[in-house]
Image (tube, rainbow, N blue to C red; front, side, top):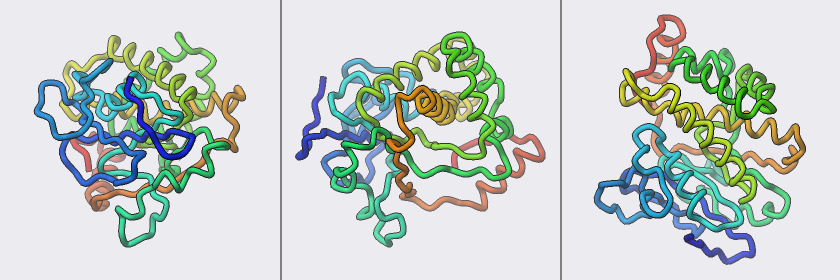
Amino acid sequence: MLEIKNLSNKRVTVCIAAHKKYQMPSDDMYLPIHVGASGKESIGYQRDDEGDNISELNPFFCELTALYWAWKNLESDFIGLAHYRRHFSAHPHSKDKWNSVLKKSDIDSDLESIKVFVPSKRKYYIETLYSHYAHTHYSTQLDETRKIIELKYPEYIDSYDKVLKQRWGYMFNMMIMDRNLFNDYCEWLFDILFELRSKLGEDGLTPFHSRYYGRVSEIIFNVWLDENIKNGKIKSTEIKEIPLIHMEKINWWKKGTAFLKAKFTGKKYSGSF
């Protein structure tokens, strides 16, 4: 296993999923991961096809191949995931985005009391998590996920039904977690996703819609978190929200128009924004 060393007693590694060269944070806790590296030239980052890996599933699992690689190949006290275009931020209103990206020193004082760091809630206001997904993607993917959870993890089904009715969630597959919780989450998550793939697969889907595993995981992270708060494994006081920043401009007009078309005309999303 690869061990990442930090200066403080608590070792923190936040993997940054990237499929191309890009500016990266300079703080030592970050580890850029070349996702979908299998069969491709090196871009100078840690490859996700080394050690125990699912690199070949990247066209479907997106940044989750970095999450899987971290789970199987890292030894740190806290492990997290970010995206080359999305980061946790200590100073989200700073004019210098890169200087505002979260540093280990920003969370050092929390590492004894906080077990899970999450991005600020994403609020949907006029949609539930289920209805938003159903309008923009294919609800059968969530329906099948529910069946799998009900069969394999029935203790999570109440949390599933509750979360899917929420109008907010911790999204983007971003988190920094205590190692033991991270292990538990990944074991639960990938067991569900591999079963989902065996049930539904990608036949008949466009490359964009074939990446639904990463979208399902965004939602069911909230299911896992809710149930583990209820069962006492995680206290609500052991969860901390950290602001999220996008390193590139988002075309909100295009995104908003696509959402309205999806909601009112049935036109599914056809690409990322």
